Image 1 (tube, rainbow, N blue to C red):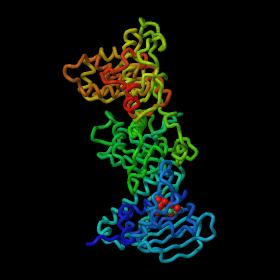
Image 2: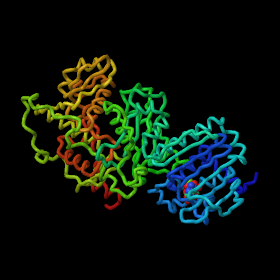
Image 3: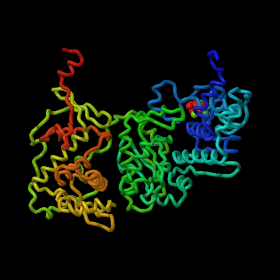
Image 4: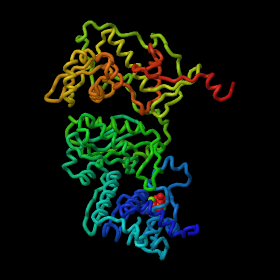
Length: 592
Ligand code: ADP
Ligand code: MG
């Protein structure tokens, strides 16, 4: 065949394949348009699994008569004008492809009235061609009707599954948007039967009762950002207690800034949060909203936007994992709060809007707990340690081992960039913090300072029999390190106190991490158990790679590293920093 440019309609039909795979994709695109139009109520009616008819009615802003035909042109959008707009996009749509795609493979009518106009516009299209346009009377808002989907693309039609399957896909699209927008009223009627409805009262819990059922909802724990936190990444929603699990991760539903996403790494983060609390091959049920500044996510990765890319994926991963872990460890709290909540922002339904203003992105970041007293613990009464020595001299009185460094910033949420007269330094935040904690621990040991801190409430952990035996065998070393552990039933332990270093963040999580590490076993020929234990405690207590640090947190870390005895390597021997001298920089840039 000779090379020829495809007729416009054929090109559109081919392109439509990317966006409109099945009836549920039409429902998704039209719901997104309604949400972008700020609808408070969205009613969806479907016949024949969506093949015969899909009708979506919204009470949003509508389309002005003069613009209505344009809405069906490819790359016609009111949501974006230049590529930079993508950095702070707050709408679900922006590609201007959906209506053109849908219209090219179905018979479509549009009835829309813009809030400022007297009359509504009626438009009828078939296979992408406008066949009719007239003014009509109608209430504010928009009604889209899509009939005979794929009537002119038989190949597509062949691939459609049984009606019941398509119905199910439509159900889950509706359910997901209802979860992400609890303040919008949704209803779905399939073949004349009401199949799903929400009230739009703003309560996620109420939506979940509809979507998951009350029995499951009773076993769900609220996930909330810690009180007063202003981390750049907020995670909230619900996650199941460790007693409720499934054999796949398919029941983990994730939203990023109100957009449903499929992200296997984040689902893994959710599962991981149940480490040691749930059998390895089981997975929780969860519905989680991840809210972060729009500039931190690239949503333009996938035509249907089912995938997104994060600027700092590790930070998002750890935020999700920690939020879920926190919720799960708070299990003692009992019944979930069914009243619903959202982060405190100006627009509770679309919290990412409050975040879109440019932020000094690391300024009010996660709190690296170097100073604060662990909020989960209390200091052991000094009476327990009669021969403890006076406090150590303040930081500034310890000898300096590094030049004073000025912080330039954080790289990949993993490295701190700093400068000193001698050049540039890249500091591995985790390795550096491990070193600081290790030396602190050793100083405490030498001064017989109480290294144990009693937890406010004892907590229990399930551990495998091998760990249990190891703990028994090494009871003395564990105690010396600051753990106060008692056996508690068949394969559980109860922890009353943990080493002080572990209290700053979340002692239970950190203790679980240390024990899981111990489970990993000792490599042959390695040093004594006690030495290993110290290393593991420091590792668990240290700030992780992937954690966004505030300026103050980075500054604390550097000030302490500068006074370490051996600041250049972590206790495992890995380097804590890389130095590029001023001379080296000059040479690289050909300045010498
Ligand atoms: P996109 O959503 O990417 O902008 P679409 O093809 O889905 O592209 O829609 C094209 C344009 O039509 C939108 O930008 C919007 O201006 C308008 N539009 C579509 N649906 C609606 C609706 N339900 N209410 C108001 N305007 C709408
Ligand atoms: Mg759209």
